[in-house]
Image (cartoon, rainbow, N blue to C red):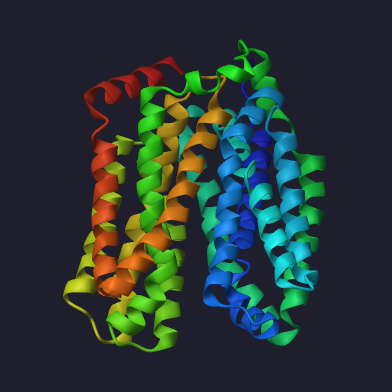
Amino acid sequence: MSEPTTASYRRTLAIVSLAHTYSHISILALPPVFVLLRAEFGLSGTQLGLLVTLVSAGMLAQIPLGEVVDRVGAKWPLVAGQALTAVGMGITAVAPSYRWLVIGAVVVGVGQAPIHPANYALVATVAPRARLGRSFSVHTFGGYLGFAIGPLLIGAAAVTVGWRTGLGAVAVVGLAYALVIAGLLVPLYRTALGARPATPMGDGVATYSGAIVFLGVFFIVIAAAEKAVQAFTPLFVVDGLAAAVTTGSNALAVFFTLTAVFVLVGGQLADRTDPRWNIALATVVTAGALAVAVQVAPTTAVTILAVFAVAGAGFGLMFASRDRLVAQLSADDAVGRSFGFVFTADSLGGVIAPVALGVVIDLLSVSVAFAITAVTFIAAGVLALAQGRGLALRLRGLAVGR
């Protein structure tokens, strides 16, 4: 198989990175308008939380859709996922009742399911081996850019033109971009698979090496830690640190902004050093910053934002190394299903963490919950290192072979 051209590499990376931005905007589209939804439909906190859970639950279909990516190529599953996500956003925009909000959330979640397996398979196929980590970092930057700008844009639209118009605009943009992907994306992954022996659909589970399964456990743990930060930072800053409500929301924004920036730095590290140690470094920095927040309890807004900036920067260093591990440890004809597997594990961690830590907050305190979150980051780093010398040798062998 001939190597993809520089032009096709750049075009593919740009297309899938923007798709990742839209994906993350959609995942966080509803929380910014929760106050308005609660007022209009008379919803409880549990009903609102269920909408977020349903989006994550729909993404649990990533394993079978990863299989589909490996069978038919990544382009059309990506197009379908992009379009279905937009349809789900449209349903929420016109929802006449809570039941239709639930339906819209489910459709968004199912639409999200093929996006990670398809995107990562495309990047893993088209990127030059020497730039794989940096390529993953650009793609991840696109996603976290969506986390950073999505709530701001949707929140601003909600207070100026209404929440229905804001969500409707997200739906229209998503459908338009699905057409762009269909027209401009070359099905490079299908071409790559054409030169490889096909793996029968039913044998998918057998293609998961022990290392990939172990990485799935790592994904559960790191996703649980991230979801805890995402869900409870504002509450921790307000209740645990006695700061203003605006400081709580700003702390979360600072965390993910620095995450997005340092994702690109992490891409440079992933191409030059052992990815396991990069992950360990990232988790130690993040956990250390959160521990400072819990133990020292900074009281000024500037110090609080600085602590969460350090935590976000550390977290961003991890992603490219994480993704490079998955790509390098996947069989050539199972890249899509491997990413489907680990991102299903990621979704599972995101489903479990908010409920588990919510119980901790109710029984103990939000500060205890955040201390547990810091320990969870450390546990993820230990899992990355625990893959051992055998994995390091395999990675070096893969790098030489490719």
